[in-house]
Image (cartoon, rainbow, N blue to C red; front, side, top):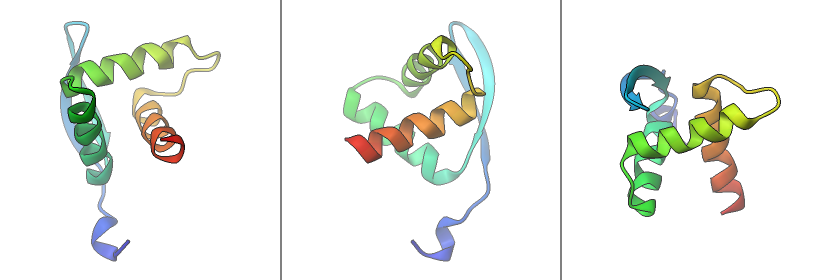
Amino acid sequence: MGPERFEGPVKRSVTIAGHETSISLEPMFWEALERTAKELNVPVNALVARIDALRIEASSPPNLTSALRLWLFDRAANG
């Protein structure tokens, strides 16, 4: 990974259960989220909502941004 991959977070709006919220993720995480949504044939908003639902079920839920990063990392690590 070259130094050009070390980019700061980019804020984007997503809609979860009819409510718009802002999420700040580094570009590589946005790319991974978009790629995964495409692989699963769902819109990015739907994938974020799915991850959010899992997050809420956790005994000590992290914030949504952390949950997205953790979910993407786990998916990459465990296929």
